Image 1 (spheres, rainbow over the protein chains, first blue to last red):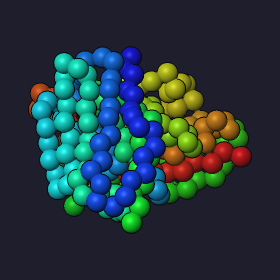
Image 2 (cartoon, chains in turn purple, green; image 1 turned 90 degrees about the vertical axis):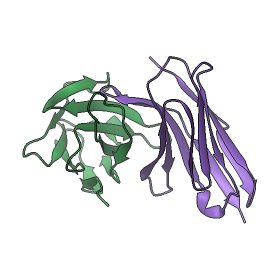
Image 3 (tube, rainbow over the protein chains, first blue to last red; image 1 turned 90 degrees about the horizontal axis):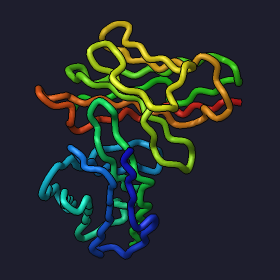
Image 4 (tube, chains in turn purple, orange; image 1 turned 30 degrees about the vertical axis):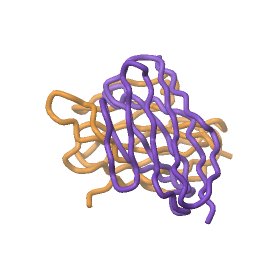
Length: 108
Length: 117
């Protein structure tokens, strides 16, 4: 069974700062997902990646398969980025295994 | 843009009652999932569904739970006799399942908050 660990659990930063959230997992995977959960509870998929790097706007996700590690970066952070960011692995027939999430607060 | 919908948004029930949570996945998607999130905890996988049958289920998904796709559009989760510990947010998700792989971006519904009294 895959164990997914995220760090930090909580992060408060000032607007404009560069943010990094880390994720490590214990067993080799076919896909890793970064998700965003809003205060109301809704979950939105940000990225799915199996190798290398993906970029969407101010968000960048990287994965190192050999080290079983992924990072999510936010450049030029903004208060609207405040949310819980969740790393999850898998997603095939056996569904996703989730980390506990990183609570991010961006202060103006 | 296509989206996954869930009804109701909030369900309150008495312990021991049956509840049915409903989901309408994105229409051309092939894989369907139910997840739950107990307040303050991480999201947990319950069950996956493909080709009109269960693909995988977790140890949480015991005999009290069942899933069904009765009409080709709705995807339901039934809890036969609810317990206090079933109180949680239940999320439905679907993915497109490109040929040769089931590993695709998952699209989540807004969730149903179930409160068991």
